Amino acid sequence: IMTFTKKSANLTPIADAVFTVVAKAKEDKRINGEENVIDATIGTLCDNDGNLVALKSVFDHYDKIDHRIKASYAASFDGNPNFRKDVYEWVTQGTNLKLAHNVIATPGGSGAVSSTFTSVLDEGETVIIPNIAWGSYRLMATENNLKIAEYELFNDKNHFNIDSIKETVHEVMKTQERILLLINDPCENPTGYTMSHEEWKEVIDFVNEVSKTHPIVLMDDIAYIDYAYNTDTSRKYMETWNKLSDNAVVVVCFSCSKTMTSYGLRCGATVILAQKEESVTEMKTVLEKKARATWSNIPNAAMENFSWVVNKNREEFLKEKQLYIDLMKERSSIFVTEAQEVGLAHYPFREGFFVTLKIYDNDLCKKVHEAFLENHIYTVKVNRGIRVGLCSLPTHKIYGLAKKMKEIEDTILK
Ligand code: PLP
Image (tube, rainbow, N blue to C red; front, side, top):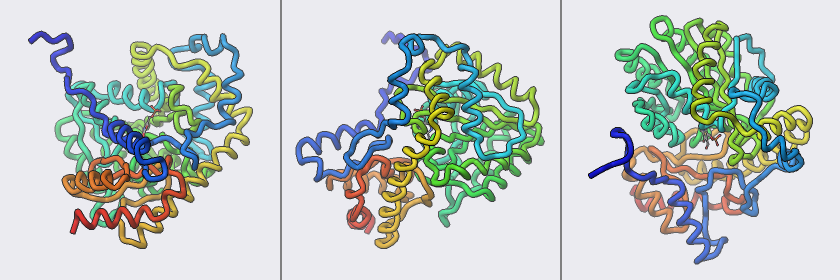
């Protein structure tokens, strides 16, 4: 047969695990009524009436932006200068970072992650990611003819697994000149784990060790950072980066999607940090070209609105966002407390949009996930676990949920 796409193209359609279950949940709600369905599939922030949250402190002003500003190209392929400056300040607020740095605007965190993958590694090389992670990392890698190696995020004591990071990196070092290591912290998707400063120190010590023989790029995907419980201290861990060696670079992937509740406005940024200006410049040059060749430029009004919000409406914005952080704190504390009471196992949760049930055996995981569906509980199956989207689940539906899940799990796992 004739095909029209490249030889290496993967012709299997995207079977997005999330969207499939979302559709099922929707149908169940239509048939059995909203109140009889637990829909914990959605990964966006929703209020207790089940409506998507679009922050007033963000969108009232967006609506007032002049048509020509919305219509206009960005000032530059690397983003608007004021946006780039504001992103750096926003991302590193409350820290005393002493590194050389630069910023490139990207279409969301997705653009930041994928452009970094393809700018750091050559085809056939391996990117190192957590085994329990956002599903897009894998697709971004494989679509670009990159391989992936996974480190185990937690050990059998349910603790952050630095040893597995070390083993995985050492394995890749045997065959690869350059190392690309990705960490999604704080508020990891899907576990809600946030690393301690001690754990960050260990990672940086290890990165410096690796850098003696291999240039290493450490990516930190901070997509959910603005839902960490304490905004003032949520960036403190970045100060461990001050100790980076000259042969290492940190690339931070920032997303306005969650921070501004503006998933569809496609705005984010890559923040490059290193000891030496020349390392930053090299990375910037390559990423900027990639930007120009891929998406050209970022929505001008999205960048302008971000700058307006963080400069002119900061207090209002922080206040409004805090309401939803408090809401998610309430939801997760109900769920986690009840899970503890009934003995429902989950990965260590600190803060963030999701909690993930721990079912290490993927076959059992599949069975439990299906049994949940039969009981009108809709969740997302991930590697070695089941993601519960507390970000979108109304608080009143969370009471008793852990118990119900435990009972269903017991019928499968017994
Ligand atoms: N990183 C993680 C872990 C995510 O979950 C997401 C979105 O779901 C993103 C990055 C990027 O999102 P966006 O491209 O909308 O900024």
